[in-house]
Image 1 (cartoon, rainbow, N blue to C red):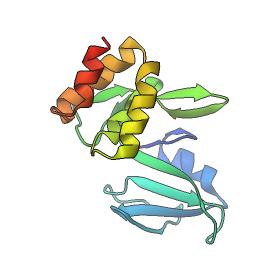
Image 2 (image 1 turned 45 degrees about the vertical axis):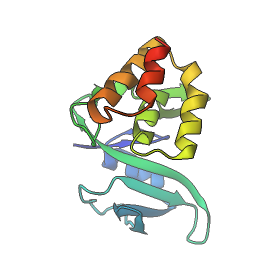
Image 3 (image 1 turned 180 degrees about the vertical axis):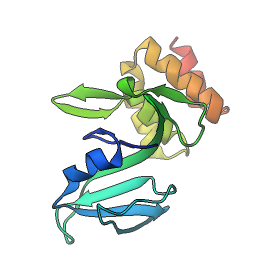
Image 4 (image 1 turned 90 degrees about the vertical axis):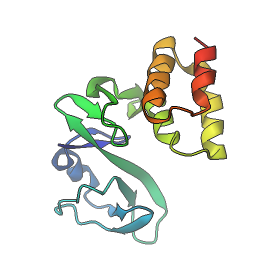
Length: 156
């Protein structure tokens, strides 16, 4: 089942699609290529990102990420053996749900970009032992030699 993992909701596309009525919505069906998306269209499995703006000439306001779920469990699409209960996938702050920081860092670990390193440095001291352990275990599965693993272990 496809599930939407975003700032606004975690649920099926039919549950979340209604939230986008009146917005200019684009899907990334081919990586790094956006095309308009009609909300009643079923997206193909390779679509993982939805970009949203208020009108065609406006700036992007937010991005929705699509991922997989098995019942009440989130599945990391880059390594399906990495799973987590949907109930613990987001954190709430000021009424907004966002991906848990350790999950966001896992997504960022696919490449070594300076902005992702900056995010890791900023977030690392704020992670609990449980969050650091989860991230280190997930990186061990998908990104075995990633340099963040050693820094996570050093803080344990």
